[in-house]
Length: 342
Image (tube, rainbow, N blue to C red):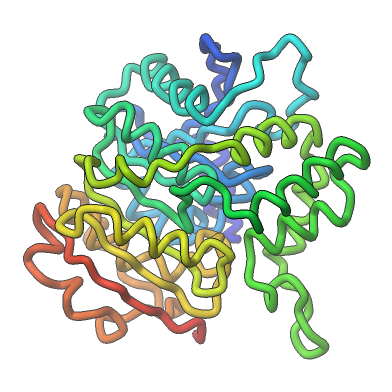
């Protein structure tokens, strides 16, 4: 984490508690609200601090995104920092309710078309939102997304977590299962030579601050999600999909890519990475993001160069990404791999 960026983001952020017809939702706003909007939605049991701080505290991404957008970090109900236990009177929401809630948030801020960035469960909810409210989505940036109903393996794992959350709360086993959902096994377990990373330790600590009953509500909604594959071809916006090759949802991301209109979608696979590319390897997102956003007329400030720490260079990107189609109204249906070595 970059301390100077952290201080700056804190200084320019404001938190809003938006009342909707489906309960209240926390939205943290960064930047100039006169700029186009980028909304984010995190994965299960996370919020923007534990799901997006890696990519937003990366100086290059900070300059690219904050230069072009006002960021609206939407937290799932009861997942915001310092959230209290949700009342029994609060409605139990389905994934459709969560998508509709996003529309109400946009109405509250008087936003028109928005760019969307979501991770896994958050990517599913934003995709569902894009299918229901096609005229309100400019583009989708999806990280290890879901589009099918849960497989038996995922359904069983989620049921185990549901029972543990109900009986034991956010215990060590639930944290371990969630961390394996987010990160590659090597990143979580570490080794004698390479201990558990700071990113995983920080995420483990933040999970301990979640209210287990609030997480349980979202988990049940995600575990009952319907298959939205059939609607994907009808999406009218362009999509950029990232997935770690070690993500438990890798095959799901490939399936989703195959069902999207190839004229308007691109896939980036990241080697040696789990689901949460935004935290585990945020540098791998920089150049694909930059070229994706150029198609909408968004650019990095001219004085900002690619960091020498980044594993990316023009030679590491598929030549197809530099094609006129990828920089104009259409993206090539590419599959680009990035090495995890720096």
